[in-house]
Length: 292
Image (cartoon, rainbow, N blue to C red; front, side, top):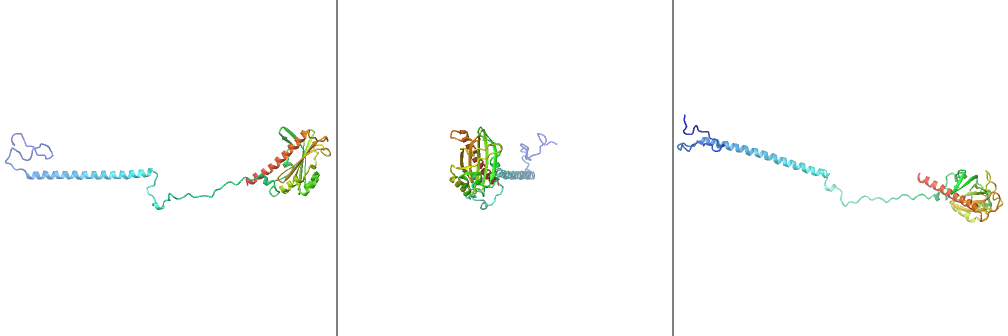
């Protein structure tokens, strides 16, 4: 069957450009197919509605994702600053104007004074003897070595003193008198340490002593008698509750003169050593008390 020049008519596709309309311009006597046009319009309307709904869904999903990303980003920023995600009310936070707690100033106690421990019998309680004050078998002062001789210890202070010293010691309450002798060649020296209850009594005894107040020389244990009748050199001094005396001379009985420097030296060396030993006694007791 022939449908006119140009071959079979193609079906009209409303979505295809240049497709033939359901009516032909060549057949002017034909009226439009209104049912077909209505169906096509309804099809276009349905497709457009589907597209609009689909676009709305996509937009909603996109907006929701953007909001979620914004919340996550905000949380990251807060956590990165080290701040908690939730804070207590500002009323519970400390005020910037709050002052720091104050404490009373403290300081270390002053060091103990060694002199306090040798100033009275109440605190000077360490063991005391001629051996503790004068240990060993010899004494070195500088380059000079002195050989140690005999020692003695008595509570009858007057019995170990001579001339005017016994009276001085007794009057001021001497409780002990410790002695030791040292020698160097033909020179010897005896040191006597008188012990009192207080520093005040020792100082009073020193003030009352005169040039005739001497300690008796101590011989024996390889040390010959000396200063029994010859002129000898003597010294007197105090430290704390101790008064200490020296008497030095020749072991051959010669008198000592101002030219005999080695006699003066041995007396001065032993007086210095006695002073150091009494001071060390105080230092040792002060250190022990500080560590208790």
